[in-house]
Image (cartoon, rainbow, N blue to C red; front, side, top):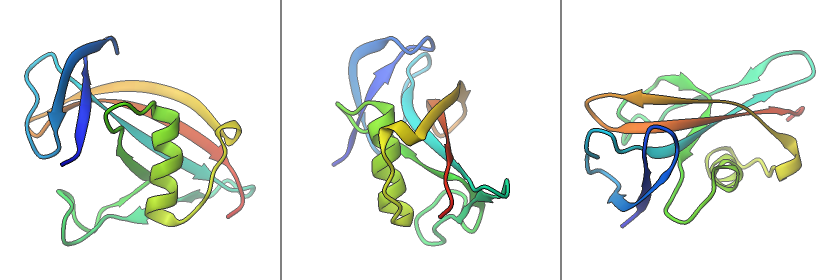
Length: 120
């Protein structure tokens, strides 16, 4: 079972975890990462989401994923990029560009957005 640490809306860690597939309470957020990869022509690499297991099948999106319990977002970004599209990144290649929060019926989460300039 995969677990996520929970945070308040300001990104302060709560002393709580949630299991993947469960709903967090109001005021509780888990972290996710988005990795935007841009080449030297200004094109962005996107991938099609999994048709069998994703909440939004067939949607085109940047590489993204959840920050697992005990992980920091930049490590999650490196892991997710390799797991999802087979590209190995170094910490120095990731530029943190923004953070935002999302409240919805499925889950509340904090998004850490990274930009990578790389020809792949």
